[in-house]
Length: 110
Image 1 (cartoon, rainbow, N blue to C red):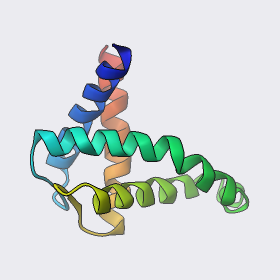
Image 2: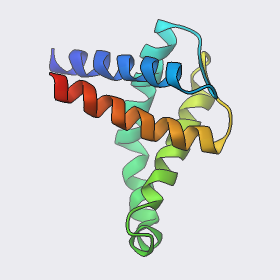
Image 3: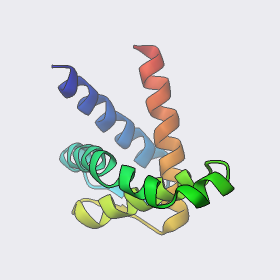
């Protein structure tokens, strides 16, 4: 049950973030559900590997390279999900930051 609630919270955060940013297009609620699912799966499977491979760069930049990895994960999700489009790398990075802020605010309100 907790996984379902987290998935719906992530879906709401994706919808709000896509609404805020002009460079992010979301076709509807079902696309947002799929984006939340794909982002969750990519964050569990690919992100740890990328973090380990880029550890020297991440240490050199004091962890700021993680933002680039998050942006790349979002661009991968944009390539996988049919109703979700991000217009470029910078919108992807901005979407990552806005999504993190929205998720923080939603989880704080719980």
